[in-house]
Image (cartoon, rainbow, N blue to C red; front, top):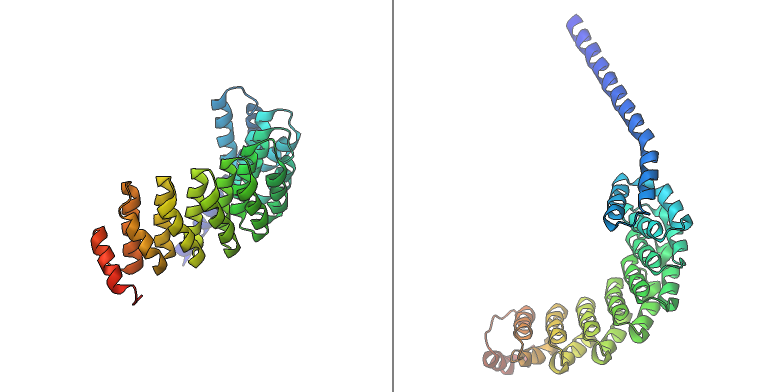
Length: 306
């Protein structure tokens, strides 16, 4: 019994000692953090890209204890690099206390600060930012990059209030990169009301990159209307990357009405188009048939049964 008491006393003493050492080390470490953060924020002013990147990464690793200083630097510093790097770091750290400061920074005079702030707001996931980002997407006529990042952020936030702004950007924005971002963002919102605008842009947009983005997005949204437009673009679009995306997306949509177009596309001059068409035919029908003639024969024999 006495031995047990001694063991318990020693065990308790060891636990207390360990806790005291841990608390001492933590308090000693915590006292160093503010000075370190202050030094790193000042390093963001450096002309060297490598030094700024290093400081940004270290601030991200420090995390929450750095947020207050970064919030202040974002909206108060006269240095563009400080504001830009602060916006980036706040998005990576992930604390929503940064949201009001990032929203304020959407009005920054510098393009990169506005763009980085928009991107970080998308990463933080707070829908408070939806309306300010919609406004930026519509009205920031000076920078396509800012509008592009705003569109992507709206997609990540997943709020359906953004559909009208994204649809408008897809139809009217003069930058193909913004229209690509809008098309991709509409797919993220996963709302069938986006199918019509995406179908129109798939056939009418002058940019191949935008049409590819529309085809990819329609593959995720699905439906009979999407299938019809994808099939039409598969056979008629002059850009083989668009045709490839259409062939792939038709397999995801999975409607039988796409089968004739996919069979025709097996003869496409570009191998990627024919390969994706073959894969989609297998996905839709469950049949592993090889070659255009064999598929055509199968279709004639089975089309009335499907």
